[in-house]
Length: 424
Ligand SMILES: *Cc1c(COP(=O)(O)O)cnc(C)c1O
Image 1 (cartoon, rainbow, N blue to C red):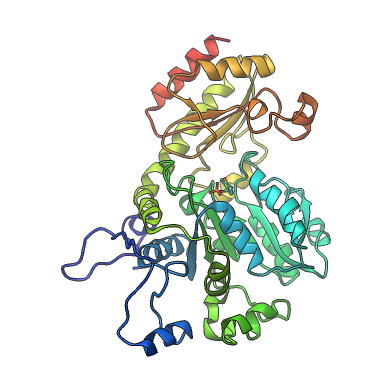
Image 2: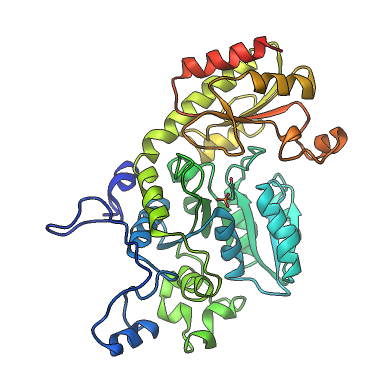
């Protein structure tokens, strides 16, 4: 099906029923699969035959959704995980072990900062955080002989910094290691990182891909383009004793990375979503191409409106010409960026809280990127342990409000913001 345009892939890719089969992707709510001979099961275990045998490794509902997302990103294979965090973790552990090192942009999702800076450190994997605006030379200088990958987010959550993917890819490839890009906020509708040199893409599907705030999940996508046979990745190119001596690059060819992630790490770590969750994700994906442009259009209108308002001190949205990342945004996301806008209100913390409590349509929730407009005040919630001085240092001032613009009518969204600002 892969010659179809992105919109068609969103609706149809991954599941093609045969004569008389259900039109809609079925939920295969089964942990296990029946075979007529033990010999066949043996061959499945030995990876000599393709087929499902246990849903911790693979399941037909998940398989269809994985094929759809792989096609959307232009990759050779994908693997769903139980959360975005699990996707990031497995994407790193698949090529790193104790003693290894990673180079990561410093402006990444808070959960990923903790994963890299605290938890992976306990596993013996070291990280160097770099300013995403660094030069190629500075990025290269952050690597050492143990570096196994570079990592960044297309559009960082929550700072909305736009990563120069080509620059990161150049630095990574000069060190013979892959670039992993978290493409959650942009989605493959607005940016396809493989086209700019990224090697692996990860997503929190809990955001725009699901889009309705009903299904927590993640996905890892393999471009199939990275040459693992360069001496740095023996785990992919030498026999895996835990899998009857399989050599991933020989057995799975260009799908070596994503296959190892599944048959080795998913087998051992088990962070697999349920078939029902994958079905809900698929429902979301079927309208991704309709929702994402609407999110962007509405967010752009809100950002422009806020920029003109005298009670607003600053607006951060990469779609605005005033954004320092506008040029990069136009290059990497010519169709639009995302639905998240952050801004400051005059009067600091007090005014920000009064504004938020006065909103009627927009709800206060700890989530972004679903159909409903929502709002969060980091200083009084996710970052409430910090003092005002520490907040400013963290780039999350006490006046900062983060709004995730939904797909409601823009006039209603703007009217709600207007009446709430009048309450300050
Ligand atoms: C939310 C998010 C994650 C974590 O995903 P979960 O599904 O919540 O585990 C990772 N990266 C980015 C950019 C996110 O926005």
